[in-house]
Length: 126
Image: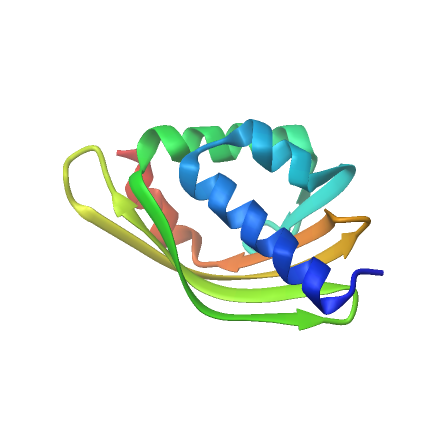
């Protein structure tokens, strides 16, 4: 079980890698058998499936950044509430509020539960 410093350090590494579009670094933060669950589908993704999605987001959304509203250590991991911001290919601004709850063990994410409104993500499909 992660202590609070380890959990928040993992959160920082993970979100900085996603901001940079560095899926190789994201893969290092995930445990090999980690599961990524989304509220809008009720299903879990494998690490490989999630890395494909993150690569797609990196191609569709430039100038990505996470405005962290709250990040707290919780027993066994962390919770982060944030707004993902960036620029779409048509030059318009994008923002999507979200929340993740993660379990962390041995310095890696073993479970990521993501809560967001999928209608906001649709703007990236254009």
